[in-house]
Length: 101
Image (cartoon, rainbow, N blue to C red; front, side):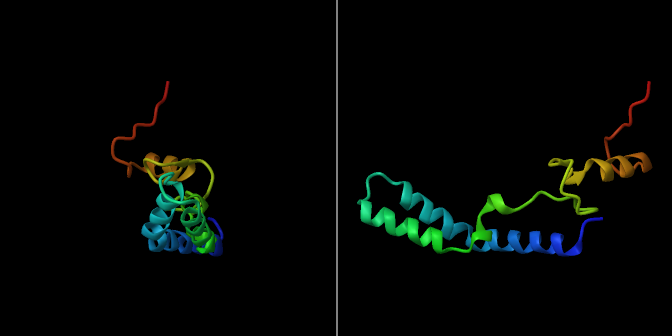
């Protein structure tokens, strides 16, 4: 199991990303628009930099929903490889067949 503080920090980041997503997208579009004057684009870039750092989507870490493990994460299942193997062996993951030869 991962530290509870690390999991909670990541959840806080996810909430911040959701809160500032629209504002961040609007400022990014403004800053990238070549038709606007340079001053307006620069002002948008400064406002974007003033937003909380943890509101950027790339700061959110993919973590296992079962254990909170940050490594070996399968996006489709939203689980780590270890949790997936454990639940698959019990038969709780539909469609997962453990191979043996």
